[in-house]
Image (cartoon, rainbow, N blue to C red):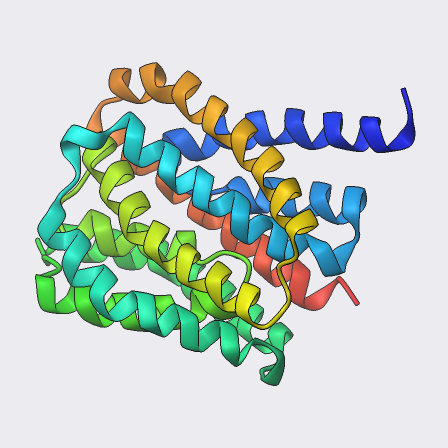
Length: 247
């Protein structure tokens, strides 16, 4: 088997694993796949490939939990979020990525006790809060590889868990990544070859998501929240690692 075929096989295996994990916790596919895509195709191609793969990652969660989407939360988040993601993608090259990674990493880790504090005081996110979060996170989504962990406390505090959380967060994020990809394409940063590689990675993520559906159905709500806290910690530390360790 040639080196190119080995690279694609590596991406497919990593994508399946990423899909299984993100299918349970709603995020994490980028953290797993970006190092693999960078190794297989180089750092310049990894980000646009992941933008395409993220569309399939979110689409698969929507299809797996279609009946549980909260369409009001989706609309409140997506209407301001989609244009904000396009704006973020257009300003991607003008902002210091390292500073953004540090800020998001610290915020994600801080939101672990923050989410528990809000839950203890029965703080509820409203549709107005969802719209504000959509605009802010949408803009950041256009700039960085993944902002999925930022969505976790927002959608949980709105009252969504398990399938409803996975489906609504994925549906809301789907529009952001489509807007980001269209913007990349319009600026010539998403040629057909990159789209093809993104389709390969995305298809394996979709398969992993459906494999994990049965595991999510068996989880109780408290265990689900505990797993999400662990994923938030991992995501935050990964972003800080990227900021301080990588050149």
